[in-house]
Length: 310
Length: 310
Image (cartoon, rainbow over all chains, first blue to last red; front, side):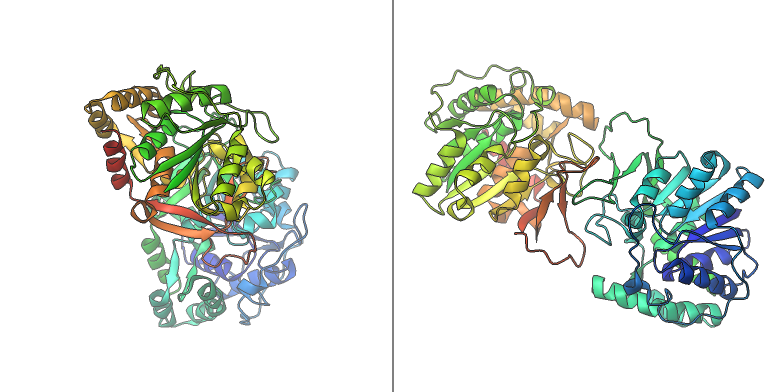
């Protein structure tokens, strides 16, 4: 399996990279970076550090968009720390970013290997929207696409109704979700039910080795944020759950529905909302459907995530 | 208990009136009518017929708004039949509407008996918004208000995201939900989990007497519509559930949350959506909260509804 990762590390992005890096049958063909959890300069530096840490230093990293298509950026230092990794200084990077932008690298890779490269997108969708603008055949050229983003029937996390990756660039998300990709959407509806709790964190703390130790330290800050929200020692496993769904959909996805998803761009109280027609008898709709994941094997995922860090 | 009912009968409105009429301790002090399930001329005529049928012919009926505050009306003949009662000709009315409008009657009644009159609103909220405009102290003068309307975490019924009563007049709903009433919102989130199924309908068919027989006939058309949506012989008990919640909140409401609810007026894909901040740690908000009912005793309600028709 050959995977391009578009991300904004970010603590849960780190776990997604750790998950993929531990899959022997996954070749990470490239990593694109984007603003989001922090500035693109910092997320790019983090991507390089994390690939070194998790044993994939050879993966090309391409810096991507530094801001959304239309609106100003809104970074998430309060969730991921001032350096995007909970204030923990990860090992020095062993490489530098490539000269291409993230969108250009993605377009080049899928043109070179049509249908063979799957995409994991766990940041704002700006790079994917740019790649789609550069190469309108991207939905046919890419393999499967798994996006972490949105909140369909669950509350949002940056507003009452919107999830951070979508809200960071609603216009880009609307373009990507409507483009006709073979796309699975991993929204807060499932990620907020996939919490790593105190027991899991303790188990991680007991795992020896640099990868597990750093990861546990990254999570400290992140868990602190979630604890202030949830009232318990736990954190949501947004991005690594999406990674696991890309690698093993048949194991991870318990239930899903095929439905067009739109992003509200104009609402006074709903801008950034992901809207799907989940009525028993939905309206006819010629917008391409995506696979909205509605139930996952959270326990199975958490076990695999821990194994990935052993 | 003294109750003013604002409604657009409508088949489930008929059941709400039947429910209230069967409560010996409930005085229905007035009924206001509104366009919605049909034109206001027809809903007014139906209200008069239903009050005669259910044994409350003395209740004053005031015709209300014939159209929404801002947008054009959108009636629901396909759900409630061409005459609003499933094509069944209910007994002739024994009275005529009063000379006041619904909003004027409501304002006069609450001024005469401040704090003593509860309001059941099971149609578009146009009359309540007009009453609020006529009398800004309405939230203090009225008692409790129970509104059937909205779809907060559930799919809508007229669009993917919006419920009919709210979507019929989003501007009116926004004014009413923000006005500071002691208001409980009974949304599709609970009414679509309160279905009268085949067994209940059979039980109703076995009840003797004019009230049960007419009601069963009204429901025939309504169940036909729901069957085409749900794929099973059943129908949602929207309005009578709201009536039961007004009369016996302590028995009917299993769970609720106090939260401000806004109506999206500007969305391209979300106009008419009812938006609430249901995050574990909601944002500070100085808009008045309403009581959003999140779980009900559906079985208990269905039993009481059947008893009301015996």
